[in-house]
Image 1 (cartoon, rainbow, N blue to C red):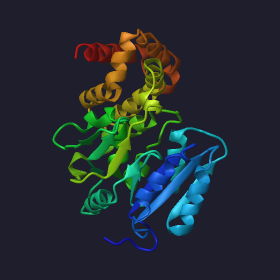
Image 2 (image 1 turned 135 degrees about the vertical axis):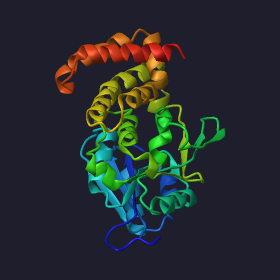
Image 3 (image 1 turned 30 degrees about the vertical axis):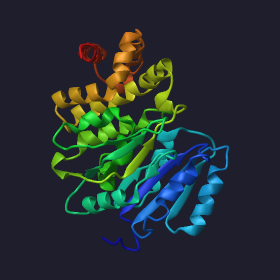
Image 4 (image 1 turned 90 degrees about the horizontal axis):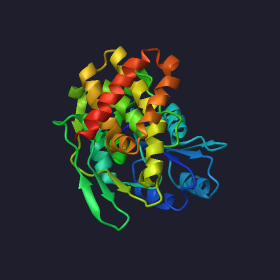
Length: 306
């Protein structure tokens, strides 16, 4: 499975901002990955702590470590785009700076990725809640892959062929949260289902934090979904227009993408805010706002009936 000297088989990219407390754990977990196989691309998104120094020190001990930086914070979406623009691997996978990689599982997934005409490898992950309780999440191909859009670690346990991203011009939105769900939505819309592989071993540990963005207050979670909602709708519009996925599958994807956030917005009467966003985005989408309003109302209604 050896990579050549010119191009690694995998680029693991890690955006970080003020993560000095967690980076040592992450760095330890990736330190023994073979440098000829796995490139590590770190992006410092305007950190004000010692995180950059930790990565610089690590780069002296391991080959294949790339450190990029933003002068000021631009958000994890922009940081991920910066990483992907530089990544050289045949496949790419994201890792959040406060989580950790399971090396054996990751290398097993890479072996599956390099076997044949694979475009994407779905991997099981382990999540640890703030009280220390562990639970393994196993992914399956038989069920619709869009169901995994509601899970924060979904992108970080998905190995994606670089050419799939470049050929479809897939980018992260420049948001400060929810960017992974938008990106993952687009990937799952264009991937050939026959070219998806399933790894058997856990490759990633997702550490849930009480102070993380994904576990904020109900109001903050609602704001996060409102921020990403136009981007998700934009992706779905592009997919349907390109006929990458049929309209029915796009509708299912939207339901999965919004998940509990849609219920929350409806319960708090925040869906009016969501509809207002569509009015503002009319020119950007270049389609009937009335049509989008109807679709959104239907999605809310379907979510509320579950």
